[in-house]
Image 1: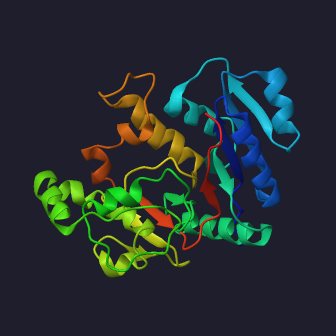
Image 2: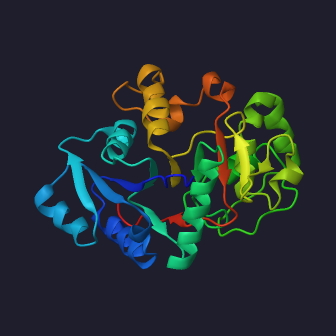
Length: 281
């Protein structure tokens, strides 16, 4: 019996960055991203319908939004909730498509297969060109000496070996292990460097879990109900004490013991369809 194909939507969260949003929408038009999805929405913080609705509708996207700035957590949640699809590609206004329509199609189809094979979240930033600022590589190198560096467009500066040793001594192995997942953006062969943490999905993507990889808002694919009922719900029920409950960042709220005890699975394609570039503030 033929399995029903899951529906897929794409959501962009944005706030007062029309130049950057246009750059991103132009890139998604070039990659023919909308041909791969069943719905596409741009969620505006402090929504100005008379200006912003025509802007995105000219590209074929739906415009929705809030009259107030909901912050990152509640804004992400509202953007994802605005879709009614099984799967969601989550982007922000400064995430651009990198690839041709043919490449993008193959990458999204491979990501969907990873989800169907049991992955919870597929990270869709390109390994070699995730776009600045990207602090993950530097954070990884603060704890680990590179074994076989991945060619990258990111500027970074490996610290001296004694600084790595000192930081590990002061911060401990638990802090170091939480950085291992970032090796996928720094090491050519993450399995060779960290065989305890990485494996390959049936489709050939790199795979790790929440013990080693912190939640990241960068371009991703996940089931809509996983985002709404697990990720965003957890932030509501257990907000970080470092931020006000109404204005949480998901990354900060999930930087906790509970997260590391989960068995959430993440995959990273060898080449990803998206990068990051912000041209206005």
